[in-house]
Amino acid sequence: MASLTYRTAGESHGPAVIALIDGMPAGLRIDREFIDNELRRRQGGYGRGGRQRIEHDEAKYLSGVRNGVTTGAPIVMEIVNRDSRLDDPDSTPPIHRPRPGHADLAGSIKWLTHDCRNSLERASARETAARTMAGALARCLLREFGIEVFGFVRGAMDAFTDIVPGASELEALRSARDDSELYCPDPEVTEKLRQIIHQAKVDKDTVGGVMEAHVFGCPIGIGSCVHWDQKLDARLGGAVMGIQAFKAVEIGLGRETATRPGSEVHDPIHYDPDLKDTACFGFTRSSNNAGGLEGGMTNGMPVVVSGTMKPISTLLKGLPSVDLKTKEAQTSDYERSDISAIAAASVVLENVVGFEIAASFIEKFGGDSMAQLSASYQSWMDQVRALHEQS
Ligand code: EPS
Image (tube, rainbow, N blue to C red):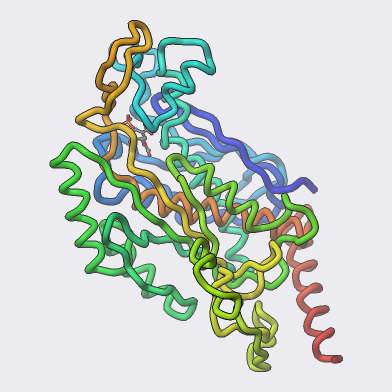
């Protein structure tokens, strides 16, 4: 039994983007519609550029799946790029005036070239389509255990919603979010964000934002306090910071914990016998400042992860740069791009978070097949309940 891991491959304008997922137990029925819907959502949102009118992202399963069910072998998923033109020098010309904020300058020096094209193509957020499908696949497994992830846009610039998503209203929240062009379940904030992004378009500028993912139904004890790289918050932090253009990640109250005394940060523990058969085993909290994670492990409250995306670094009006060949001051190169991709980034965040939760879940319960994983999960849940019934 391997750990659940994934790798991606593919260039933005190459033939395809691919995800290779290893360690998925056999016997998981894949919800293709759910995965393709996540890919469709990732393509949407107000502020996207022309590329999304060309692409029609859909996952193809090249290995590890038979008749819609995983076999235990490595899974390769592919999305074909319609806008594939990497070998055509006229439509993918060399880039030698690096865009501040993009991988252009560092990539060109790292790979000893004056042409930023290669690093640009791989660094492009097109790759997040592969990460979204890998995460959505992992979420098919989580859903078998009643674990759901909800991602949305919290806000940008001076427009932020103060919505606190709760498990009981998940369906209504999803529907409000899906009605929003900015994937924000708050209609007023959606309208403000739309105006902010519209103005950026007029100004030939770009806009970033804050996205959040809430995970409901995780039993207490996923992750570990034993090693730094087994801590679930460390894994979530790394995965979220790995999303293109993300500059910050926070768990629960995050940075705000530094502005309050301990008595106003740590979440009081209560016991409610009516909840003893749920994922929290009856141990409830009156607040969730920890964002569902203590000591690197889930504590029965929703896991709350927030990520901040910087504004897209390709600006129509350009930015001060230098020609890599002549070293003269020049305006940075322009490539067709988005004004804002915060809606899409909320889908990426949701699925990236889902993948890490699934990986830690499999690490705890193990097994080569879904039957083994379920049996191990059930047996441990029964042992926890038995322990607290005795005492
Ligand atoms: C991106 C540039 C744009 C974005 C792209 C990310 O692509 P293009 O140059 O083809 O218009 O649309 O994102 C996607 C293609 C996607 O599917 O998310 C960049 O430079 O990062």
